[in-house]
Image (tube, rainbow, N blue to C red; front, side):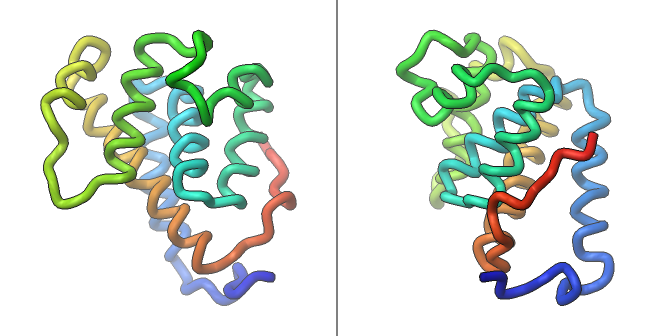
Length: 150
């Protein structure tokens, strides 16, 4: 059961988060890659509403069922590119960050595939989905009701 509904959310709160998402969407990063980040981080955080949403969005964008169902074990499968693997590792590291800085081991491989501006947007995308996951854990929006509207 929802604790907080859309009607309860302060005016402008979601709109401000969407402005951040718009900046990510207008970056040079691939939308499917951002979708994989959103789904994987949502899986890590155990956010059922967001997993449902991003799974459906990736399906709509043509992502394969094999890759979608294997994302939770991406390290053990051959279905993801080196670039995707580097990003998924970075996303998991940033999601589970503690008081330590991001290591060179996690940062340097990004430079093989992304410029510094893109790394900024990757970091923002990871932080953004973590924010949404945490909000949904508090609000308890009902999973399963999301419909892709693209």
